[in-house]
Length: 122
Image (spheres, rainbow, N blue to C red):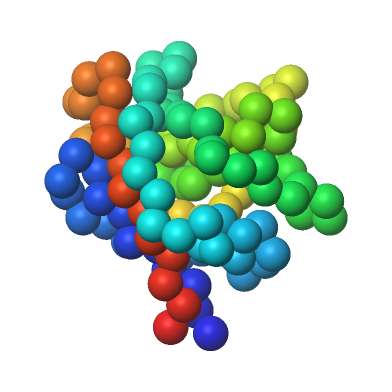
């Protein structure tokens, strides 16, 4: 089964293809969620997750790419970068990828954006 996420950012609809693992399952079990994402370092938007996600046995990365969905270990934060960037010394878990080009939308947004998400299994 494919796992996709419906995203709405400031009223614009996007979809994402999610990784097939227990972490994205747990994110999906949290139900439809709404976040106020804040810009960080002029390269990504982030917001704390309402509940921690399990990180054990999931590979982590120190480089994020534009349009990816990530969760930072230790911060319990969801992140959507709009530029490719190294994040060392931090490590992030890659949750999935937004299917449409979101970089220009986020690069031109203000200090915050409203994100609504729902994971759907098809």
